[in-house]
Length: 185
Image (cartoon, rainbow, N blue to C red):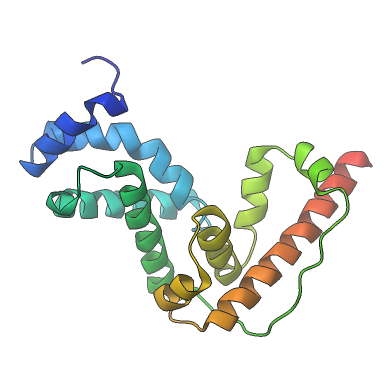
């Protein structure tokens, strides 16, 4: 079979609706890397991310008939991935509710710091955040959820969501500064 691309997606999804294994395998191959890139931002370790991605694909295969083909597939899949990752976190009893509102301060030379940090280093820093901070940070900053949606999804208050975002940003700023100090030492 030739290299799979998004152009093949309508046919692949049609096969998935008919529960054809080869179509399910093709969809998995086409979107596995994307799924991992989303999942790894939410969970701490690669085996957990693989589990999240596999569970998300099972949900896609089970609910593919509900997918509206007039809309793009990737955002629908991302929503399933994010919700699956959050459910995984909840099942692992790792999500701790943390409260208090604090104002975030911008750090000087943010662009300079980011230009000296690789993508992999940045992901590693995000993964080092506590589960609650990392989850809110990913949902708000990366995936574009509103605090109201985050609060409802995670079962926390909006103020807790905002607080966790502020704290996550502050912690990332500190970690980025430390990383820059190490590189410039």
